[in-house]
Image (cartoon, rainbow, N blue to C red; front, side, top):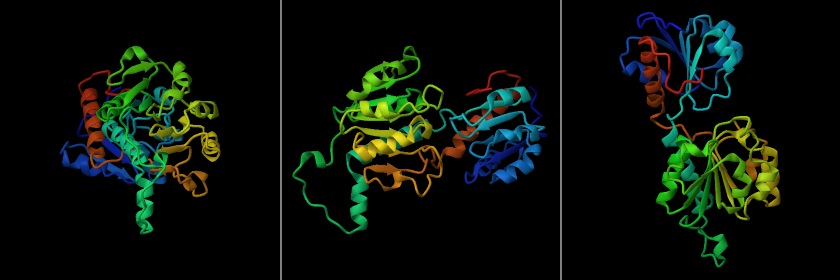
Amino acid sequence: MTLPSKDKLNVCFAHVAYRLGDNFKARNTGVAYFEVRSADELKARIGEADVLVVSGLWKNDLIPHAKRLKLIQSISAGVDQYGKDALKAAGIRLASAAGANARAVSEHAMSLILAHTRRLAEARDNQAKHAWRGMIADPAAREDELGEKTLLIVGLGRIGQRLAHLAKAFDMKVVGVRRDPAAGKGAADSVHGFGELHALLPKADIVALTCPLTPETENMIDAKALAAMKPGAHLVNVARGRCVNEGDLIAALKSGTLASASLDTFHEEPLPADSPLWKFPNVLITPHTGGETARYERNVNDLLVENLDRLWKGQAELKNQVV
């Protein structure tokens, strides 16, 4: 695949909110670009782009209209929305943004764990009601400490490994699950394959999902997995919504099989207003903002510029290459 020269290249940044063009312009690359903010705009202008920087606005039916397109730099680490075979057939390369949000998502997961343990959502609710909570006689109903608790991290990639480092700073025991345990445990105390997940769930105080969405991880946390978790366990999902069977999750929360959850991702986003998940007092919801920080545009454009340079130099391998 030959990329047009710098003076002839046209980059399209497609996102409903991110200011990717502003960050790209500040780099003085000399490369032309334009931005679109909606799916309709992207469809109307996809034929102008040699390079597309996109995530949620991508639809595979755009491929026949993308006559000039040579490279998609995904804004997200997850790439399950892209038809990889169709892109390959069309001669379009694809690179993910893996690693661009590893710090952000791991910190978000740790924040959710701390918010749950220190009952911060309850404190905020009481603040809104001007209610001063009195001292609590029942130790189980009080705020808690993380030291000596067991955190099970499902998906020990960049995000999961950094979460393990953060958790160890709070004196937690960290158990990791990854597709290939031989790839290393990082800061985790032990690492296991996905086949051991159900045997590990009863030992965990907190289960954090940081894995990609694959056929192996889709609906991985279902009724059977939820029933295997210890009483009082907390589920954190900063992976993909479809890693959890949402119907089974709602049933487990209703029945008390699962004590509580912190969720950043969902089957349908935005989360529908009539979803039962909104109403559970023991569920903390964030609107898929785990990776969204003030640095995100810079991180994505770092990857884009590196991949453009690699292609201009004739290198075959992209950073975070998918196709």
